[in-house]
Length: 332
Image (cartoon, rainbow, N blue to C red; front, side, top):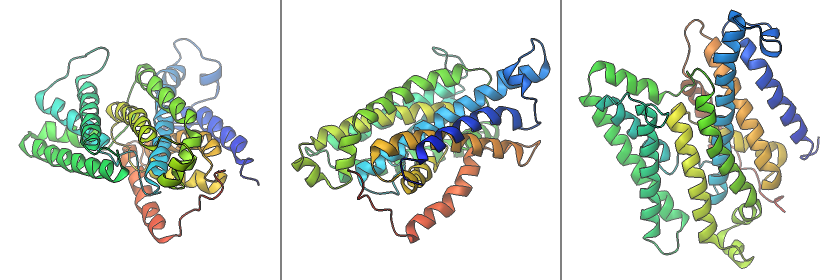
């Protein structure tokens, strides 16, 4: 199969996962509960109010995390880069931990206290990394990476401090949130995340040519007329809020942004004109499939999806370290 031929298959698989996942999670439900709902029917309420919103949120979050990983891997020219490389996830986690520790359970603009705290933490982490990088005039990827590592380390240490000083209940709530999950009822959470993902994907879609050139090297990209510093700043400021909102709602679900872009690169090549839509489709379907397996494999106990993706991501990370990298020569 040609590399262009994979896109229709990925679209079909993604649509099939979206259709089937609400029916197979936990106890199997009839198809009629999805396509011919009956008012007041228990199966219809479970599928329409719990499972379908959960699947939609998982698909949107998976697509956003996957395309974020694709963007960072192009910007850093490293297939091991992830959406959490620059400390956005740890900033959101710190904000959530602070909200739990302070007992902020009230709603703010439709967000819970923990979600609002996580969003604020992600925003502050993004601002800190951007500000530290701007101290260097060239806005280099090395400076950005070092700033992200520093912010990540600081936030992680503060999270440990909060957990150490919290009581048992707050410590458990923080730990459970750090495992990630989609335990929401209704479509409100998915609708809050969707605009940020659409905006981030739209901006990256407008920059696919620049991303292709960045993968060949900053010097060559600059010689072809790319404003390297401006493009990196736009990518960073487009991706970081998207990741921050996803993490604030779903928790830090790791390794999606590492695995999905690399698998799609194997299927459709390194040209971002094909890689971006493939990554969106595959990332959404991948996280829905992971959440479905995690919620059913140990039924009636539900495994947090972040644990499941970490179990997959660890071996995959080692495979990337030991296997020759995929070439990027077909980006033209």
